[in-house]
Structures are given as C-alpha cells and as structure tokens.
Image (cartoon, rainbow, N blue to C red; front, side):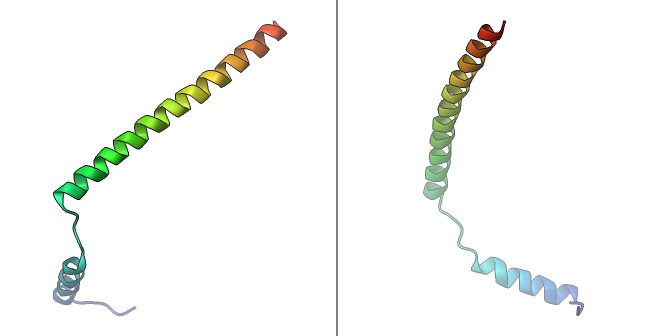
Length: 65
C-alpha cells in the first residue's frame, strides 16, 4: 500500500469534506423531532408488550404455586 504525504492527505480530506451536503437547521430540528416521536411510540409499545408478558408469567406462576 502506497504511503500518502500529509499534505496530499489533507488536500484529499478537504476535497471530500467539500462534497458533503450538510442539513439545514430546519432539517436537523425536523429529524430530531421525528426521532423523539418514534422513540416515544416504541417505548409505549414495548411497555405494553412487557406488561402483557409479565401478566402471563405471573398467571403461569400462580398456577404452579
């Protein structure tokens, strides 16, 4: 593997970074809100599933005990 000089490496990095399309502030806020909404929905869903399974396990244990 050929070695690259630090100067060439920095030029290549700068060229690649210039190709990056950074999101706008509005896009970042919108994405953050969507993440919070989906996280909340999934948390409620898994709370429900956990509650149902906990009830089933408690019922089965009461039959055995």
